[in-house]
Length: 311
Image (cartoon, rainbow, N blue to C red; front, side, top):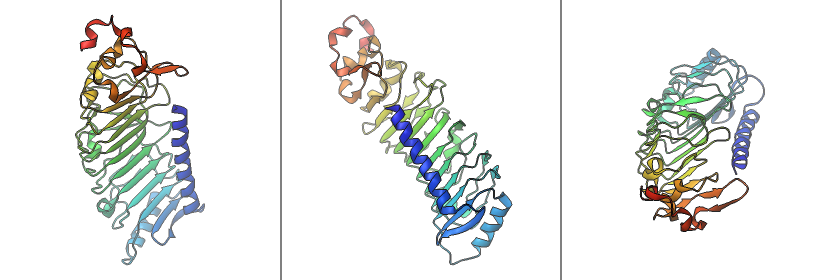
């Protein structure tokens, strides 16, 4: 299942990158490639971009919707106010291998931007942008991990969909995202999850997915998860332990809870198998090639589990 999920995610990202190159063309430079879309492709330095955006903003009758910056090894930083008076609804920054810093570059687009995609760059942390209408944010850098901190979202309060790849999430990073409905994280850091890492405070929280294609085994501290709702579907790719001190806050809120990889169904899962939580779970017992659902395991298998069952 995980190889299929990875293939789908990788393929969609590659297709997005290819579509950009076809749209923006192969000649380096910035241009209008559709009447309302701007593309900056190839090794265009930041000063050339600034000059182009300044000239473009002088056309007061121009209505723009989308900006694409990609296939550019020349830029290392997007400076504050780069876009000036230009307003875009969607921005894609793809394939800039030396781009290590993104300042609050949006300019007037801070009041119009709704979708931001950043793939195949080299950021070390999530940019702190002023984007008051931003609803969807997708960031992924295969081979380059970046950090997500709480401070990143102080001026991006309308985000309802976040899709991130290859990340290290600091505690309470998403606690201020009051409209967050969908969070999908591919390839979490192999580091154990610290208390507070996935605590939420959004009445809209509907789907949370945490998966990894490499070495992450789902290790977590007590208090890692909180703020789940009875309308939330929580899909965890793997879990080293399914102990109540970690997952009771999830199941006690009536969340639908799924673990992708089969787990060891010994006394560590007795508290679920022998409780009213069971119907809301999708937990497989066994290994990758042979497993049964926890619901199918006879209660008698847990008769010697003792006090853990009442935890």
